[in-house]
Length: 571
Image (cartoon, one colour):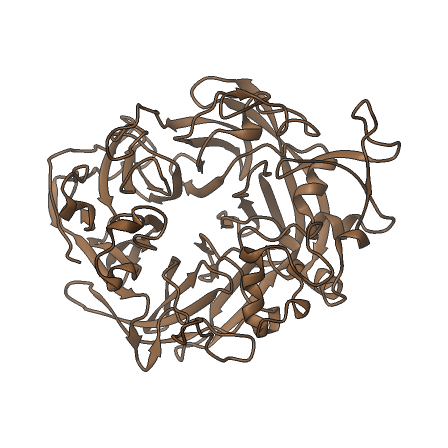
């Protein structure tokens, strides 16, 4: 596969009257892929203008899944005993689901931590060298990070870098423990995690998954400290984003009928103890993606150590909740609370003394019982703008619980029954990026900022406007400018896109498109690594989620971990 850079003049001006003048940043726009060659390529802006000065940039691949780097294979999946897992055909299991990849300067060395979104999953640390003149990053060795003390890693999705320079990952789509049988079986998808234990499902407890992992590079040798933060709750984590106070952390939930969470650590730079909160959406508008005031409901304070002790007992769902049945009038029995978890209408009662356990092992269910909104759909990336003191969060699509007693525009009460029907919006499969207002670092309201626009499906199955977002995924902000970067994870654009959105003049510029069947993951901007800026960009699972029939060469399945840049230092 070759890279193609196609340029169309399109300028984004990012200046505004704030306390400090902002840099004016503009990218050349890339076109919508039209030819077969373009649809197989990574198209990218190869020029950025900063304060009127042109700078050449490009897409640079650091590594592709399956690459041999310093004697190890990037993306090879290992079991609990450190043995490579093999496919049924005898070949090694290598993931093409590269996702969030973070950069860390440690002493005089530079490292990249990358995780792979599979069951079982992997996380790698890769040492990089940086060209002093061009800023080009080249890998020289890589190694798997051992999660065996946590019984493995499960579907890590997006991530962030903490103010103390650690990698915060995520574990998405944990199993519903109410549905797991006595043999440890749920379905083929979740049973795949059993490969980590040599296929022994009984050795696995799905309560071990659905947490926030943190990895810190502790020295120039590349040694790491690994944690899972049980105090931050178990649900379908997209990522955790730490605010500048080093205590407040926002936690979007990438599920259907999910909950927006916030964590406040008891001590700065230490996520092992703290208070978890769940959001209540108090709607103020149903137009332009909707708007609401946000109230936070406390789910209590606890430490990782306490929850880890509970996990060591291999708890079951019925150890935490009693389950009741609705009567003929669809009411729960006395003493039971209605809950809507992932669209399941339940009657639950927390067992005596199990509230704090329920708040962490079953965070979504417990939050719903306590009155939080459990109707959000596919909350994705989140990022912070220090110039405006605003947060931005993408929601991939407005559907199911976010609708008003409808499912994809058709009358159906399933996803609002048992909940509060707090969110009452029109169906929009193209999604919305929201702006959130802060008091200090506390979110007090949110409103639609960039709203996707559906269109009639064209011959290439595009059914969201090609000049607008489609199922926005992860976000990053370019500090000292006014530019928000938006990635996509969509089936409504044939080729996923990355956008630069100007917050002053509210315009979008397409700065990257990715090959058939891939998504644009891991956009994350690093403004200064030894005088260069980098916009990380991972091209995940080419030909993996659509257009599989277009595959011509097996090597084209390999994901790309790379970056757009290098940028000059933006002060």
